[in-house]
Length: 460
Image 1 (cartoon, rainbow, N blue to C red):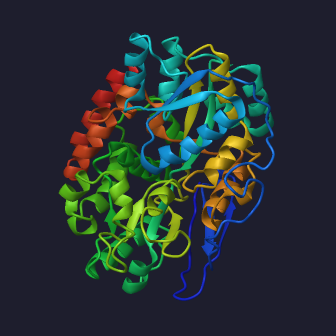
Image 2 (cartoon, one colour; image 1 turned 45 degrees about the vertical axis):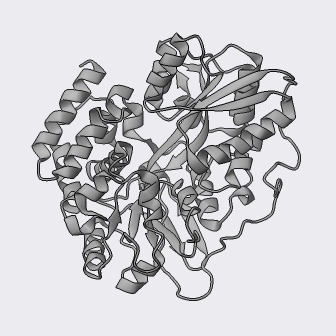
């Protein structure tokens, strides 16, 4: 999904409109910012709850459920509102269990101790496959399957299936091809949102020369660096190569990887472009990378921050307003087309219980997604969600674009990989790219490390 802004206004409000072309073919989403409507529109469930339930749930009085996910902070708080509604409708008591990455290791420890959660939200396709291979996951029941068939495209259902059996419900989706920017910092430097990688570097140079580092990079969280690489690689190497690398059908020593790392190094290699320089970037966790971009008026710690639509949750922790102070443009085209990278979290039942299946059914329904959509920083692949549930035009249009895309998207590459390579802090791709951020000139060394770790994880 790509979202972009092409204009800013110093006074008044701004309104944002999006069109999404067939993503795999066109690879771009154009957003034209010419005003803003940051206030949420009223619709069904304007208070944060659906006005009339669209899905029937069983009574589960006295039943206790646990739900595990790696979500923290506002994301966890907003999801808890969804669980409260489930409790209200069923009489069950639901406890949120904070998990750590890699979640497969966390769940393995829980299961080995005889205390698996009833449902887990898995942030990687590879984690879902592992859960099925370890015989932890329960197939989706008929009620949840009916919700999926009614409200999800084939592509999202397929992502939740393993060898033809449906195990998961993609509750949350993510657009990972966005760059959010501080409107005041851009205006002060006389910079406009770039559409190409070359323009991005030129804008970064202008911003840094004006006294505001161009980019806030969350290098302490290796997953953000995989997203940087994937967007550059998809745009530069193309979808066919992207799919081959995602399946390790080509090696990380391939020339296409060399080109992508060299390109990424054009940004990471400029110390003045990064908030705090390389050392600062490597010590910056994702939430801070966002908040420091939208505090300090027209002199923030950085003018831009790259990441998905969920950045809006963290922006909400500042005084900045999405659609006014915080705007967004598509990840610039490195090759012929802008990249389109999606991600998401899949809900899986780990116990063969009535309560676990009821919760999957609820999470597959528009009712659940609509509650969290109203909180911001969330988009759903569920076609039944009322667009008015989203709190501003930017998020509303991202969601509309997701639905309009149908099955045409490329899923996050690292999330498709075995967790040992693509989803483990301090190891595999995360660590190799952190080392690359520290020394962007060592492209060959980064490739060799990536290939060695990938070969081990994929078993080839």
